[in-house]
Every structure is written in C-alpha cells, then in structure tokens.
Length: 114
Length: 116
Image (cartoon, rainbow over all chains, first blue to last red; front, side, top):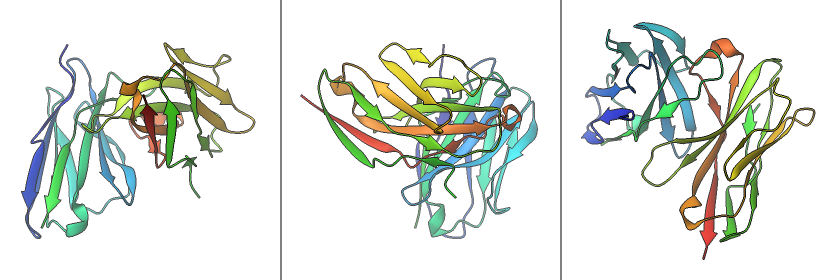
C-alpha cells in the first residue's frame, strides 16, 4: 500500500514568489492535514481538509491556503513568500480523524526562501 | 501556556537498554487523544502509539508502551530494548476533543541517540 506522497521534495524560491505543494494521501483516506515544521516554532498545524471541505484551520495568515480535490489529493499554496516561510511542510492523511485514527505523514516538502 | 511539554531536548541511551521519554500535557477537555511520533532524519513522521483519555489501560505497541498518568497529565513513552535504528526525534502530540480531526498539537520533541 503506497504511503503519503508529497511533491516536490525540495524547492527553492525567492521572496515575493508563490509556491504550490502537492499531497497524495493513502488510498481511501479522505482527511488531509498540513503542518509546517521549523526549528524555532516546531510543528504547527496549518489546516485540514475532508471531502473537499476545509474542516479545521490553524493560526496562519491568509497567504497560506489549500484545497482538496475529489480524489482526496490536496494542494497547499503560499503566496508572497517571506524568508520565515522556509520550513518543512508535512502532509498527513487519515481515514477520518474524528475518532482515534492516527495520522500518516509523508516525507515532507522542504521549502527554502531566499 | 504550552499544551504539550517535552522537557528533554536530547537523550542518550545504550543499545538494548530501556528509555523513557517524558511528555506532559495541558487541556481542560475531558475527551482527548495522545500520540507519539518518531521522526528520523528523512523527515517522515512515523506513528508509534496512541492513548485515548478514556482508555483504562496503558497503550502498548511492540517495544513501545505509553505510561499514561491522567491525574498528573503525563504520557511518557517507554522504549524497551533500544536499537540503533531508534535514534531519531520523538514527538508527543495531543488532539483536543475528537472533533478536532487532523489538528494535533505537538511538543518540541526529544532527540534520542542510541549508543552501540
């Protein structure tokens, strides 16, 4: 069974640009969550999508957005990149996390903003 | 206030010995779940073990067990018979209320190094 796949794995952007990251969840999983990991702030929740609807949202500015498609694949977009957006962006999928379901994470997309 | 506190930034353990990684949490919600994840240098977060707030027994998964002390709000991870491959970052996380879905609150992590 294929795991959570994130693309691209590494990317370099400059300030002011935008970036789109992709996440393909485990087959059958309908929930996709996104996290930002930085050395200073640790792991922080960005948002969760379930059946194409945003179900939860963390405390990030509106420059961070996401969406989910009918096949459960998800994308997140960061516009007007800032140096502080340099981070590992992790995607996690689950059948449904409203009960005890654990999240299965991908290997992440490492974004460097210059 | 920190919701999840991991007080050990780094730990060393000898191969084949047991090690306990500390985690305390803070929530006023009676329904919550506690998780432990392992993050090797590759970056992927690997699920290890889960404990629900209403679970009567401590969770166990192979060499991993969770020492859940609800009154003290602690959920320590115990790894028995450490292996070299256990060297990684370990994160404690909490889901407050089952309707929080995929929103986990993570601690700052503990870096475990297993010595041969």
